[in-house]
Length: 433
Image 1 (spheres, helix red, strand yellow):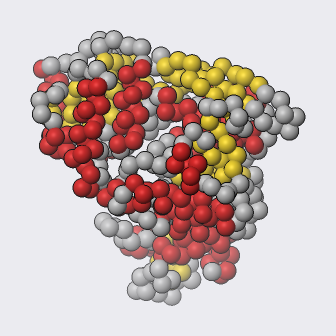
Image 2: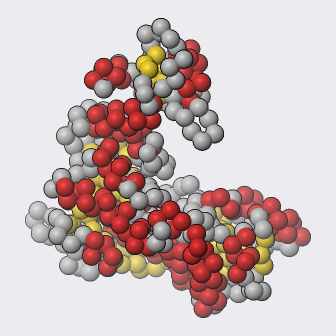
């Protein structure tokens, strides 16, 4: 690894995509389900890469700029770990069923007020994305925030061994990817692998003290707490949702022991984002970011990637939360939507994926919740809702069918929640609204 690492240090960046090859980068040819990056190794060099790694022994024989390895993906992961341990800085690992990307963005925004912060771009949070993030680490960085996703047991443990976080935060645990985890207990166990790693390195955990599952999972760990109670290091509550949430933020703990209260007008929708806001404030204050800078970062942050985005069109107000959906996030979105002060509320909901044998029961629960909250206008997209829906609202097999329907039956003067798993492609309905 030392030989490959020395070559990596001579390079300007790392790339696994021949369409994005910065000059003097190191290209890694990785095999995927539908592609083989090894076939682009020589092209990457032609495009300006300094070195390329391949696990195909027949490619680039005799070329001193092509490095042959047994497994390109494992080499990328090992290289990332080898690089990470060269840096003695705080590395915050973040995972959770919901909110991890928003929390990561908020935390990074706050920390960036004081530090040069490396953080996961987008949702590059898997066995490829985490190494790519770590390989962007350089001597100018003071702190790192690494998002970790999982849909099977042991994945968080594996990512921790690569990233070696010395601080950790689990946003929450809920029902998601049950097909891969097997059960809610499987979810808790896998997310808890982050806590186990932090404990093994005698690190600290930032703990959502209002979550009983996380309280139980973190027993015996060194924790810094945030939540609604003023006993916590940072606390707060929701003042209003119209639809953006206004937060009463209380910064309780610092070196002088002083307590400060701030009213924050965010650009976030959803009372479920309170814990994400408090986590960012907690981490920022722990690492010494000035209170005013914490407030500024939280007020400036604007969500992207179809996560709780509010859009006003000529016809309607849209709350687009269609990046992903599971029973926990769906319930939170629906309950929050019921609290928003608006008339003519409409639901456009897509199937929740990867629920396995629990899918029918969980989609049924959503229908029951919708009716209990008093919603009367609803459109459903996908086969899972169609299986269980017995006449409430209108069902469409796919987003194209809904789009065709809306041409003759437009929705106007309404506030619309659009929520579903990314694969239902609900964002494609936005131009029709």
